[in-house]
Amino acid sequence: KDFIIVAIDGGAAAGKSSTSRALSSRFNLMHVDTGSFYRATTLKLLEAGVPAQAGEALVTGLAGLQLDTKTEGNQASIVINGWTPDAAIRSEQVNANVSHYAAIPEVRKFLFDYQRSQAEIAKERGFAGLVMEGRDIGSIIFPEADLRLYLYADPAKRAARRAAEGLTDSIEQRDKMDSSRKSAPLQVPEGATLVDSSELNLEQVVEHVSELVSAAY
Ligand code: C5P
Image 1 (cartoon, protein in one colour):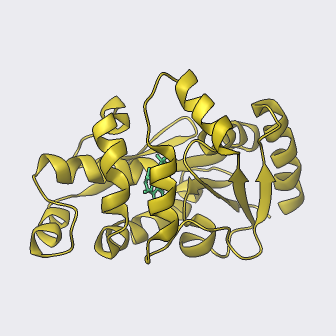
Image 2 (cartoon, protein in one colour):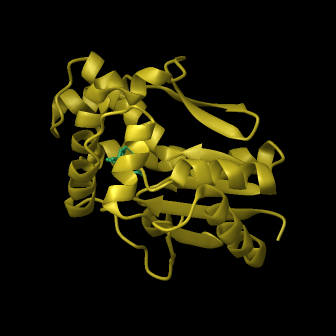
């Protein structure tokens, strides 16, 4: 294959970003972290005073957001109204609110085409493929992906990872909301490969997943 799509889903702090980043440089893939899309959209809506509920204010708020893409190395990031998200999207305020906005169908619809378009962007920019991480990538965004992975790590491991990053994050609360929402819930996509990283370090996860990527070509 001259272009592959790797979809990586999983709960908060399951190791998706580190794994995706490592894969992107090893296989020359464009790396897209869709969690940052939801975070950036959430921050913009919070700043505009738009509450996390469907309705006119939300429609108007979303209509005011223009999306663009910026690529640095293998990393593609969202650009909203000319603003490239920074550390502000990792704040406790965003952690506490993002799952509420992400549960609203209009918000998901707003980001759907944009996420799908990343494959074309990756091709145009000469990458050998796309690795996209999130909650519904293998189920909704790219069900046709060449490889669909679900990363799992037990809750104690995940809490320890976040603590090591010095961050307070409502991991379990977010996972509960993300898994139980009606619209594109977090789930193991049908036919996806489950990777349990509870007993593995990052290097071991990357080795294992790299074999799966190689086999997907
Ligand atoms: O991956 P990260 O933890 O940064 O994602 C933040 C939040 O964005 C998730 O808790 C979830 O509510 C939402 N999200 C989503 N669908 C995705 C990616 C993220 O609903 N594909």
